[in-house]
Image 1 (cartoon, rainbow, N blue to C red):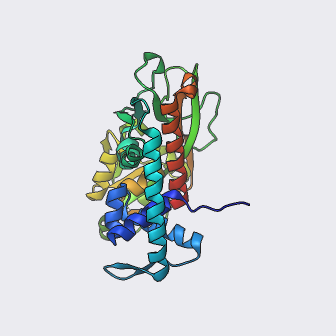
Image 2: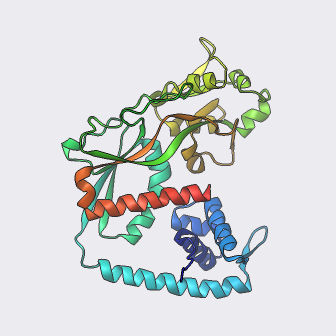
Length: 317
């Protein structure tokens, strides 16, 4: 007989929220935003077809069904944790090195690593932030996350370019797709209220554009894809990484353009999307490993966990 199980992340979010009686405190514990916790609980309520919380302006309360379900979930998660520790206690301690793009690492991966370490205490993850091509032959990187085109792949006309190279050589390297690169223009709500109205893409040229050094073609290519040419000698700002540009946008310095995957981590309530995400760039984000790592248990555990996190991110979105 088939069995249906609710998403594990949704159960963990529910248990933490019920224990703290706060979505915000649950988010701090799970390295998620308050909004992400709320979405996970909505997902669980939809799955069950029952309301678990009564939501008020400044507080939440468990419903009768929520109280009953909380007791069962708390015991089940406790049993799983105890069993996991018993199985893993004799495993060899491992350190794996992950090379990742700076803003993606600080905004997307690091907030999630606490959950990985809690589940797999025998595996330590060492992060290296870099936009340089990965040299797996050097032996100092086990896993990498990069953005770009795979060998032999060709961009479609009009797609914003990605000039970054993913690896120094593809021999013996495997690539698993993670998510697309879709650029989104962001502007401070305050700046938008003070400035000219934005109805068409061309109206963005009434504002200072914020560029990122690692993606120098982002603005001109995205504008061109919408039939707009960047004005010569237009006033602009340039930063080294996306998170710097986002901070400048939050401070009303101009309009930033960033990959959609970073929005939940960095945008915040004070930034709004000038236009919805609509055009995929000429490249995607990939999880890169060596073919020889297929038999390395620790690396495979991390890769499987990462893919699950990507799936949960897609489901929440």
